[in-house]
View 1 (cartoon, rainbow, N blue to C red):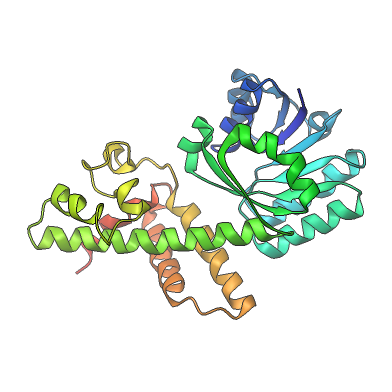
View 2 (tube, helix red, strand yellow):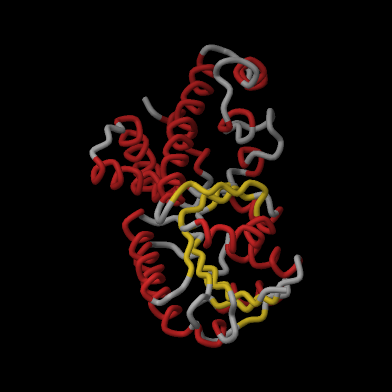
Length: 293
């Protein structure tokens, strides 16, 4: 049994912490939302009223927070409170520069650190089937892996500090671009008189196949578990996709990489969010293409 402090218990962090509890670990959680804390408590997480209470006696600290600035602020407080040798894992999706700064802070405090963002959405968080993309030292990765395996089914050590965030940004840029392509194809198919099922049966088994079709088809019917069959209730909200695409473009600008399709995808999701769709699943962008003249 490991004593774990879990900071950030929202749509992803809550079920991830619950899976650690199910595996027999002692998890104390903290979140600014009282309702979120109560929900986590119902799953066996011990709720802390303040951050320092969550950190008391913790051997491992996991953070799942919205932005890099939040991670750096929380890690500053964490690293003041925990002893040397504590393992600190950040599973947020943030910019690479902030991730590297967090690692440097942990090193100065004598702590092990890992940036370990995830892919798999809320369904994967609940099922314990997330993919973890980890950046950090071999020692930190080895210490974290048994816990990550409780929350995910594929754990990849991508390299040194910041490499996990780099992999996540690149992966989600591919996802954003591919979903737009799939949505455009289904809208074109509709205009040409193709049924959704016919196009799915062809594309999902030939050269057009990809996760956005085979697993997350943006039209109702072919993939019963996709959000399209549930009024686009988010497994992965459009606002989060936009966040990741913007991170990809920040990284492209700072590294000198040419990503014209990533830039176009970011603009399209920015428009989709501006139209009031940020809280809907990102695959709902198909409706914006249907309405375009």
